[in-house]
Image (cartoon, rainbow, N blue to C red; front, top):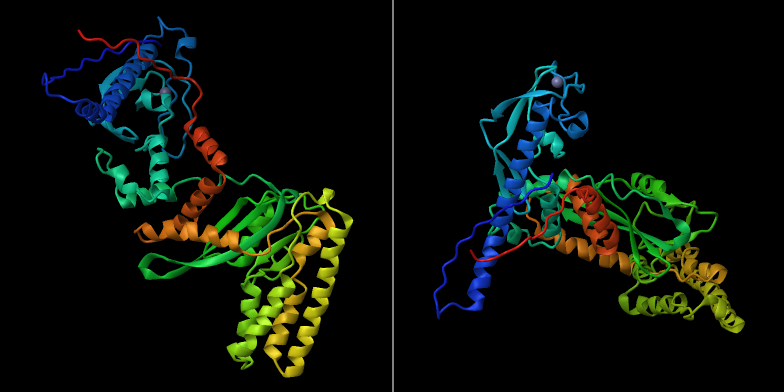
Length: 453
Ligand SMILES: [Zn+2]
């Protein structure tokens, strides 16, 4: 259908006094309400057209009724079968206006009802024509804006100054009801990653109870974060299972898994990853172990320093293929001597009676150089600390903390996923919303003319 909308506006202007600022200010105020009125008119005229076509089958061939009049057959509620009837009688309007929260404000419009000549059911044909469910109370643009606002922690601005009726509870429902959990499950190829990191952090939940948010990220070979999953109060083995399902093509090519010693993560993704203890956290872990052995800070500090030196092997920058053989050799010999010196250090600890310290370093020793071994084998520079993941948790924490409602596991999980995907996979995020909105070129509108009458 093609139609024109005529808009009549009236303005008064104080001659010799008005400024450009004031004009723009008032026009801006008009923007959303005006668009809302236009929306209402478009819907009303579409509603008229639909019931006209469905009720006059003698004029309109079935082609002109295509996509219209879909409804469930009259009968028991459980038996939701579609009726094939496409001829109706007009039955006026519903008693109550239909209200839908839109990004432009709250839309309220009268809804036509019709009666199917075949099964006798009464329904509102506009709803199915627009792809609106019987209980839909908001449209997806609106949902999108709510979620963006929540992520930016400025949802107050969204609510203020508009006729949008959304409470914090309503925002909560939008987040919980999102399908983010099912979306973004496309496979991730292990060969594109240079490492995987996992960790957890505490979050305050409903009733002030402390929960645990867990996140797993991949680091791409370019050093970018690839979000793999967020979980709330989920055991590590289940986290592992979920993540494993998304990873593809490991081909015996193991990448480092970096973590800071969280119990339960020692064999995480063992078939595709080799654990690499965080080179920043490991010396601190040694400090604690030695402290348990009764070693004072003054004495343990030089040992920590020694360990930092040994594991802090710098890899030469630049393309591995273009490196000189002697540069690779230098790394290799430094790696071998460091490994040997770590062994000696363990020995010394045991000799000095530092049993905890010795055991700590011993259990760690096979996971301290995974990134070096990977580089020597493949040239891939893997991350060796959990600093990227820590940054991710800071991002999450800053936002999650500000949202003041009682936390459910699902809300924390969904919101964390949204924050990460928007932050680190912006293109996927945009695509997700575009698909959800279903923009396919079925509606276009242009400004024909604007003139003073
Ligand atoms: Zn019917």
